[in-house]
Image 1: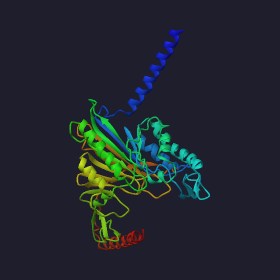
Image 2 (image 1 turned 90 degrees about the vertical axis):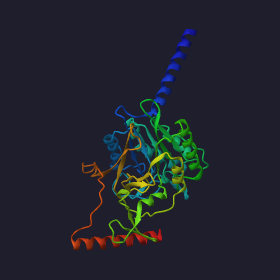
Image 3 (image 1 turned 180 degrees about the vertical axis):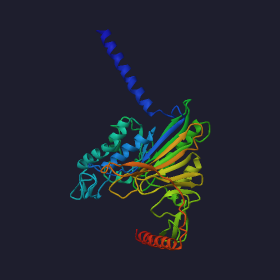
Image 4 (image 1 turned 60 degrees about the vertical axis):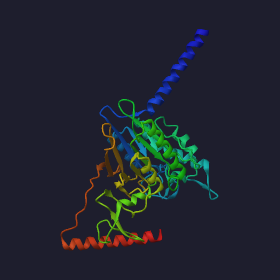
Length: 399
């Protein structure tokens, strides 16, 4: 009898070791045998319990085509509540998981919808077998569901790596993921910041500085090269823009003048208006620590550009919500073990649709548009830019 009990206990111990070893292996991110590590950034699926077919296809197809080692999702997994779409999913005219009763959020009904909406996307991540991590978005927070409940939802997916490593007052879900080289040494690091409903708070920034300093100490006093992902951008992205004439290509108006993407330091496609500013507290922390070499954001959906600001690459990545206008797409970052600071950075846009059986991705080719040589076309282009700029000026004036 004792031998039987001992055998059972031994079997349980072996199974436990196997489970924990599997979990440890799951979190042991490392460069592939070919010396690369591929990061797929997706953002803003922002859907509900009736997900759009093209959104789900975008997620699935992006994983198949990019073959990533890590998926980073930069927020707004679900839509909270607004007037919705027409004909893109199973419930027209309404979008969102939030259910209200007597003017207040019905927690249980909302949680049920939210869980179903999240699962539509997260089960694709899970089935891919690729480790993934999530930076919470403002719409995720607007659903009235606590971060503890969000962690319970994420915890149902075994390849989700998100943890709450910071101890900030607001309970933001911040963490970092180390990537090992072929010798088992930490060669690179990923920062995940929860910008809540407005941006990283000061105590979150202090957590980052402390954790960054610990990594630096373990690395023999050298900062560990890192890329940071979060939903809401730092205002410093405005430093990729330059003041211009209202007749310039890409000119957009604000209450303080006209600005365009500075093609000497940046490239890509932009829709909204941004303008130069003094360094934010978060950006100053990155410079102080000396580890962040790139930071990429979601939130704005239709932005797909990046550029260098004081030695740090800042960039927007397209969203995936089909209830809003495109472009839609993803970013693929490829790290190289032999030179981690020089990574490849590519944007892909989703074209076509499931309905017409022609959905596919195209690599975004960034090039500076030449001014038209034909005088008539040049004049027409100038008038078009001026009208668009005035529209944006009015929008920003009353925003």
